[in-house]
Structure formats: structure tokens, C-alpha cells
Length: 528
Image 1 (tube, rainbow, N blue to C red):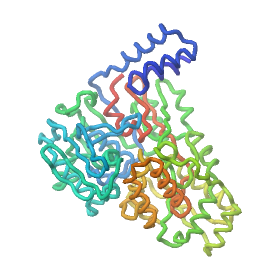
Image 2: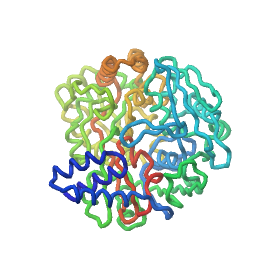
Image 3: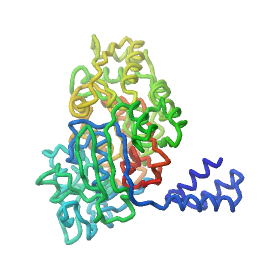
Image 4: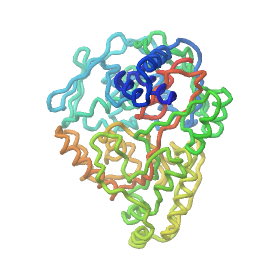
């Protein structure tokens, strides 16, 4: 009971729930008002940040091919360091609300077609240059250019024109989109001097930490930026991110005190890790999912019958139990779940059906094995997940050959390059952002080569539809289309499982938007 109330008291101190809600919970547990107030006072004192010290992070999802160009960030470690040294126009809060960041405010026309972002004054880049609205304009222009190879390219294709008007950045869309502020919080869109047009991998940003050492695939060292515009974040003197791709080695480093915080805790050992002295394991439900991608335009996966056979040949419940140890939920071959607004929960849940899988497999005309590439880098338990898939497919007469790829280079050489592979998505806070990032025909990160004009039309029209009921119906139709025709096999949504040493780290707050407090663990936490 005390642990539960302490947890809720911490959420009050972080501003995530109200004092009234906490007192109601305390009363339900039989705790008097005086004791509840004492717990709140203790939580408030613990929520006062300390300045100084060093944070050591052990992170999976890093490679020797990682870049400082935010356009190319495609795995967890680049996501973390870009979010630590960079800022965006907007940011998604822990409760899912969109908040201003480098844009101190934003407004739209009634039809959500013209958006005006008032750019914050007095923001300094790490090289001493003052940020202007023109830097913002150039950043968005660069990422909307296909030559940039930006992961945000797809979500920016609805822009008709952009301009600077004094201290304002003004965006005119081809059609209205109430989600634009969410799109501009995408982690690729860190604002750079001149938009990164001159040197996109310079490592110069506006974040609370500035780059000191960059050894891709090994370590990234950052030091506090004294002139950061927001004094409420960036409490450590130094942050070091060590790339430790092996999950067992990460856990050992945490328990020994070599690192103070780790990501991607393997669900199978999460409960065991909880028993370690001074270690707190944090698991939060969110938008992330572990999946297998098929290229819809590449044989043999160009056959929808083969794609359907493989979707029906995977045992989702078994995956959630054996790979996630219950730290997640079943997926439905769509990239969204009930954690996003306007989700249609009435769409039937696909289940394991070897007989139907065999029917579609025979109808596809394919014979011989199907090659599936996987790696420990794809997601925790990806190799075991592929083996489970292989076993369940066998009962449908489908032979899957597994090729285990090296972790280093997986996101550069296998993901979005090979026609059938294991993959991971951290998800996005809105349906439009998720679909536009990875499933529109124009998306640079269309990692299933799903290119259907009717689907594109639905997503574009949904952006401009301000009637929520109609918009929900459009997303429902798009979701069904992807579920039944797409190349995504999504058997499970994962919880984000991280761990930290409570004798070294304070200020941790649950955040369902992305791994490690939406990539802001180093920015918002402080020395215990």
C-alpha cells in the first residue's frame, strides 16, 4: 500500500495527477488525510532537482553507423542523444498533451490549414549563434526535401508553403490538419543553425546539453550547456551514453553501478531485476510495437494471400506471454492501438488460425521456404520471437528460414532494405503521424512498401476532417485496409521497460510516448 501511495504522490509532485485524485486514492486505501499530506510533502521535497553530478546511461540500439544528422536517426541511441542535445518546436508531455518548446505558442486558422508558431526569443545554439525563425524555416525545408532522407519526410508532405513573418514561422497546409503541432514534435525535427543545410551532422543544437565526444556505436558524452534557455531541465554536469547492445551486459552494468540507467530491459528478466538492491524497474504501456515487415512490392510478398497466410500463422497470445512475459498486449496488424485518439476498438482481433493460413498459403501459389531476417538489435527477444513464428507457421505448412543478422548495422543494412525482417517502432502519439511516417506511399520510411492510393486518400482526408466521428470512421477504414492488405505483421505492442538506480537517479516520470521518458530521461532527471 505504501509503495502504491508513494508512487501516486510522486505523480502529484510531477504534475501528472491532481492532489484531489491522490487524496481520493489514499482514502480508498484507508489512509487518513494527515498521513496523505505527509506523503505529499515528502514527494514534493524529493521532486526538487539537485544540480551537478554525472549520469551514466547504458543503452541498447546503437551502431557504428549512427550519425549526428537528426534526419537519419533510426534507432534508440540516436533518438536518445538527439533528444538530449536538441530541442523541437513542440513537445509531447507525459500526459499526451502537446506543449510549446522552441515555439513559445502556436495558433491556427479555424480550418486548421494555416498555422502560426511564435518563435521563442533569446535561444542560443551551442556555437553561440542566436536562433531565429529562419533557422526553423530552413530546418523544416531540409527535412521536407526527399534528398535529406529524413525519417520525417512523410509527415511533412502535407505542407503547401512556409514563410517567416517577423518572429513567426507560418505554415500553410494543402488541407487542414489539427495534428500539425504533434507532427512537429517528431524527434527528427531538432532545430539546427540554418536548418542543417550547411553541415547536417555538425552536432550543433539548442538543447540543455552540448556534444563533447561522439564515438558512434561506443559512447556519446555530453556536458551541460550553460546558456540553455530553460533552467528547469538539464541538471547533470555531464551525461554519458554507453552503447551496450547486449541486454544481459546492460543489466549487469546497472547492478554493479557502472551505469545508472538502462533502456530496453528484456521482459523475461524484468521481475528478477526488480529484486536487485537500489534498482527500480519502470514499465509503462504506450504506442510501441514489435513486428515483422514484408515488402508488398517484392516477390513472394507481392501476393496478398501469402501476406495473409503469414499473418494468420503467428500466435500472438503466445508471443505476448513468452517474449514479453505479459509486459504488453496483442497487436492486430495495424500500427496503432487504444493508446491513440480515435482508435476503433470494434475492429475484429486477428487470431492464430493454421487452417486459414494453410488455405491462403496454397492460394498464393508459393512453394519453398520464406527467408526471415532477425537480430538482437531489432527488439528484445527478436531472435526467440522469430523462432516462435517459425514453429507456429509450421503447423500451417509454411516453412520459415531464419537468418540471424549482426546487431551492428542492422538498422542500416537490413531494416527497410530486406523484404522480410523483424523490426521495432516506438509508435507515435496520433494516428496521422504514425500512418504518415511509415505507411503513406510517399513516406521515406515506408518499411513495408505499402503503396495504396485509396489508403493515402483516406489519411489525407482525415487530417482535414474536424468532425471527430467522421475522422474516426476514416481512420477505422484505413486501419482495416492496412490490417487486411498491408505488409505489417504486428503481433504485439510492448511496454517500455527501463530501469534505473534509485540511489543515483531521481525525477523519473512515466511517459507512454516513447522509450526512456520519451527520450528525455537525461534532460529531466537529476542526481539522487
